[in-house]
Image (cartoon, rainbow, N blue to C red; front, side):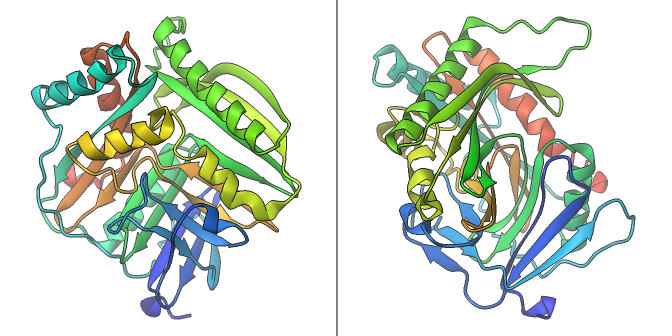
Length: 356
């Protein structure tokens, strides 16, 4: 396959690896109707927060793959990228705008419409010149080197646009019928001079996510073993994390399992369906592929799927950064705003130096 003929690609680096994988496809990228329809399919999945006409569930076929050693300083070529046009939507770049939506979401918690709900915001980082493919490729390498413990991916298709992700959260990893997923919630900045002490709000948020995942696995008939919660470091932040390991005898059921898991309360809320509908209807800016998931899906081989957090979309005029935080009745606006600021730093630091 000639790279110029590629219609979509994904390049990704798994945590604690020095090598990345480039996966390319010619022809139209497959748009899958539902998560359940991923049963028996394989390739690189690009899933949105909510499947819709402008945010389809995508599957990049592995028509050609290349392994690239990132320890070398040599440049490597990537296929052409699609940069979506940016129309300057209303964003949560100021506290007043964010506070208005926070009060709306928080009111739903106080009225007990939801047990938990996640509020996201989007920030636009304008570029002095139109982003180019060479700089975006360099940003991917910079993200890999800055965040060796995270899953890092750069994905570009005509339907999704171009996204750079550096995420700590596993949605589903495994092979040979043995899989794991995680409950990751609660966020604090790393302070080397202070002992890590988790607030009751963070503990409660993590418990909600862990209980949800345990129930999902039970409904799918999976016997799971839980480890945690424990403190997990991701870049300059720490989170509370629990690991779930389980067996899945029929690997062709991965689509149905993913439909149960996504979106987890870590990115959505409880109850799931009504929280997702409320978020789609009331957040000022569509999340698109932020808080979806992406990664390699190979039921007869190895599957590595990660929640699309700490990410940005590269547009024709700059960078759309995304971050969110889980709200509970005891949540406070200033703390939630600061949490989104802290989370955006993970990916904003990867923007080309000339643009900083």
